Length: 235
Ligand SMILES: Nc1ncnc2c1ncn2[C@@H]1O[C@H](COP(=O)(O)OP(=O)(O)OP(=O)(O)O)[C@@H](O)[C@H]1O
Ligand SMILES: [Mg+2]
Image 1 (cartoon, protein in one colour):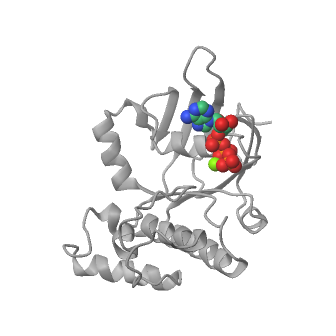
Image 2 (image 1 turned 60 degrees about the vertical axis):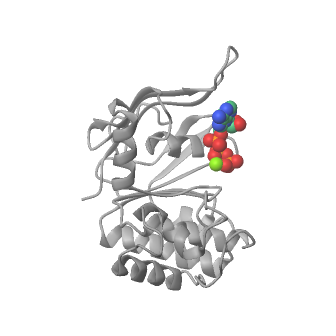
């Protein structure tokens, strides 16, 4: 079953005496919905929002609850464990390891390298690479294009079949055909596996296909199409 997400009184400030509020979400609820697209101008807080719901801040004001349990009540070791079991994440800057091969990068979330990895996992990595037209025979990824790296980051996010997929601009560096393929793939696995899929995107094709939309401006939700009753922060 897809996971429910609820945010209450979330406020994220930058550090220091002149700390500014970069995200301010009084309430948000993704109960019973599987897909969401988040958009907004550069600097509006989209990546910060994704990091908050991924449990990537050490601590924050407010609550981020998946299946009614506040992620930020967990000790950081427990939160890391939760993330490893529940999240497949595509970072805006990919966060790949330049010194590793394509295959080893895809396998990172499994905790194995290609030498020790169980055969079925290697097979899955090869299958994902094939689906996204990635060649795994390149020795390292340092000199690959952004589009190639983006597809490797995507394969890495899907290797563990996690129930929640968070994707920060997953089609930003891709040509139209690759972007279409990746969006279709993400939506298909989300539907078939009943996974929660949250995409940050400006891509009109993504905006068009995903019904639930959240628009951020200066760290606040200014539009929310979700049919929930408690959308206090919605315009
Ligand atoms: N660690 C930080 N310290 C200070 N300011 C930060 C920090 N992280 C983000 N910000 C600021 O918070 C705001 C929101 O940043 P964020 O990266 O979430 O925006 P975004 O909507 O993802 O932008 P983009 O579309 O360019 O990726 C920006 O003004 C950014 O400069
Ligand atoms: Mg961003």
